[in-house]
Image (cartoon, rainbow, N blue to C red; front, side, top):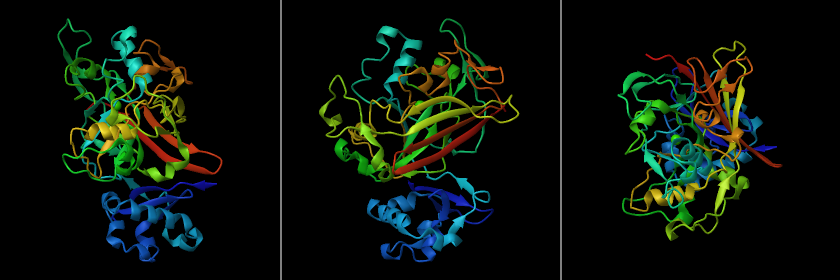
Length: 395
Ligand code: CA
């Protein structure tokens, strides 16, 4: 079966970082391929392929990057076996020099679940939710690549609005299963992006885990939204899948009711059918067994990526190459597809049983979370790799 291409950054020992492409399950060094004149017709400076990040490559524009993808699909891989990178020797790095980071809140089931738990089942969605894709501006400096671990955050915590806050480590450390959209084209300040052209501004997608400290979040989030509950760490996969590789996985997005304002109305409303899985490796299990915690799908988005971009720029805000937009936690309609422990344990009320006899509501020190993503049909498969992170004790 044909497999889709993904791009990343790798190095071996102290050698310079280079661009890598995953082709038919193997990793190829794009600088070595360029030195063998594989991309000669495109007149790309080879230095683009020996680089700390994908940004310069993305800046070439879609015409060139798509031409690179086509060449990679058509070369005889056996002929270039000297350009293969051995997985066990390679370190994978943060693929993008991330500029700005925005996190949306675009899965209806997730917003509904949170609304039921924290507010009122009859008014779970706030009045604006079905009229605009809600988001907050996050922090890009604390986004790290899969494999990098972090210490449990500390902060100000208050379980009730009638008591005084205390200071301690977070006891409700949680995941958020998300996809990251990587922006691939700038728009000038003052120029909104048309919703029907918004996908031209997307280079591709990566798996994303928006780590969240629910107890810190509860006390701090009113009235301006998340701050220290989110910016202590976020995890992104080492691989970016170009949007063009997902052409055969487009599915209709659900019809929106109520009707949205004209600037958010799409001629062709599509989501992407990408299976997303969250696994827990409990610290207590010596065999490092991965326990499936949830299985969701990127198609569970009420607001499409195109609508997110159109809304983000409708006031003239400028997006830049290398900006990241988180989708928001992606929860499906069934409880086994909820994309956070907050929802899976229903606010900590329903502990989740693990095979070793222990239970989890929120995460414990030493626990490892692995997010995986893939899309498969009869003819084509795309592998997003994984995001793997272990919780270290508070510093
Ligand atoms: Ca989030």
